[in-house]
Length: 455
DNA sequence: TTGGGG
Image (cartoon, rainbow, N blue to C red; front, side, top):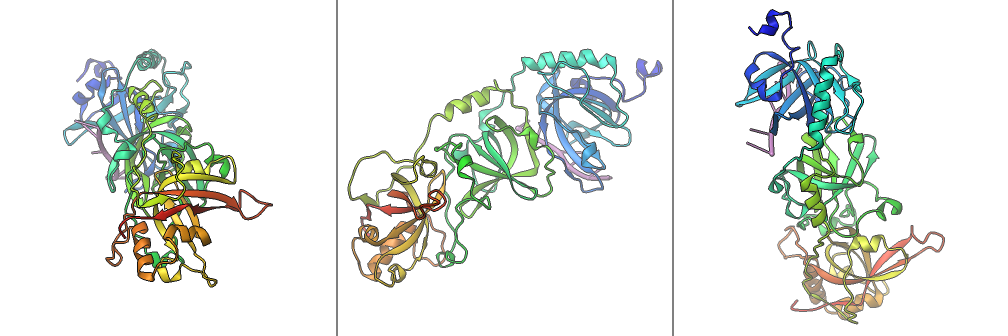
């Protein structure tokens, strides 16, 4: 029995640095730490809501310690103002799991108080649980922790944070990226737009060409395209990864996401939907404390200046070669003028119609819609009349036209096989249909290119 | 009760 207990100090109200927590497995403890990781609340498998944090202090920061908190409703769980804030935890249970020490916050006897992190100077908690008592003796510990945090540099291993150009389907990864935008796309459905300056790998396309008419390959994962106003604030190079939330994750901490700030996401699940990359903020995902001067972030910011561009496979040829430098589809989408001409390097991911015999309208003119994709965006582009004659080199036989189209679309001939369209160089013209709504009626069409090579 | 590393 400790001397404190003998003097009347009740178990669980005795402060200990995180380093020493391991000696108290099976007992209750009082801890003061900095919140390094924060997982959004979710429903537990029992009756409660649960929230998983990881904390550090000056005695224990190489590896953080897990705190699992349970409360009967979300409002009672900690409402963080920022990751990196200070938490005082009283009467929490120290446990051991898989050889590691962790801590459980039990709603029946534990309590917490949240305090501002390194930039705070007041000593009043901004959110407390029932039964929490701020005590004067904690104040010096909080001040000491804030002072330590000022000079604390998280040292992240860069290899634990793959860049968007390195991501793989159906994996969970940590991402260090800049939040460009986030919005509610439907009731309680939020999307985060994140970016690190690199291009995500291109994916095979599994949609069926014959279904393009009824079930077209989407241009983006969000149900409605972003407004032009928002679109024009986004970078024109580098892929934008959409991150959506798993249904069970409670979205009452969206204020922790700051537009234009870089952030470290832990355990984001990666999927491919309709050939587009999607990150999922799952119940296991967390936000990590990301100070501005974080060395990993400084490095990523620097790397984001290096832009990569896919190498065109020249199965198309410009009729009037102007040697213009290709631009990204985001450049096209955000261009300041409604009518303009561009050269882009893209993949043709869908076509409508897709059968050579249907490419001509009733008056014998080419008329089709292509879906173009690069690492930044997708757009629809029409091929009409003379531009079709240029693209397909006149009016070849149906067989020849099929071969050309298949080459463009990456169709192998094996029925329903996923397509992997080649990168091609195209000239795009933007124009409008309605004088009263030039931006709303803006379309794109392909011109001045032809499919060449061995078809 | 519940949940639980890099």
